[in-house]
Image (cartoon, rainbow, N blue to C red):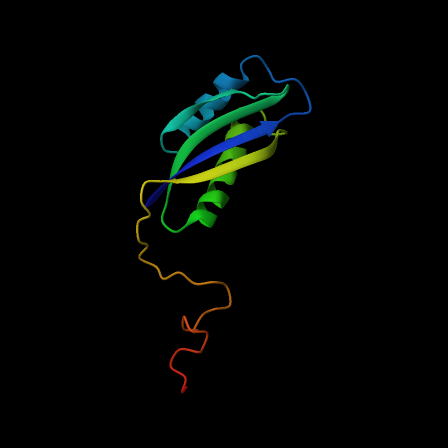
Length: 123
């Protein structure tokens, strides 16, 4: 398992409620799949909110980005900010990468060797 830090920012069309930071913090701190939570805060511009949390992912960064964005949107919805638009997402590996027990492959690369040939085919 690899641990990733997910930092996100969202913007709303309307003014944020006065308790938006507390609601988002509560949503993230109780959400299944979310590891240590770094807190929520109002963003640098009006109608923006930011938060950071950690997730554990078995494979790689693409999976962490997919899962992190899904969890961020789910937390916004749970906090009553479902109409907020996710406008920023940063995913950062923490520590050294851990090997996966599954082989890495690109879509369409099944059966291909690292030299571009087909595995098991005559040269």
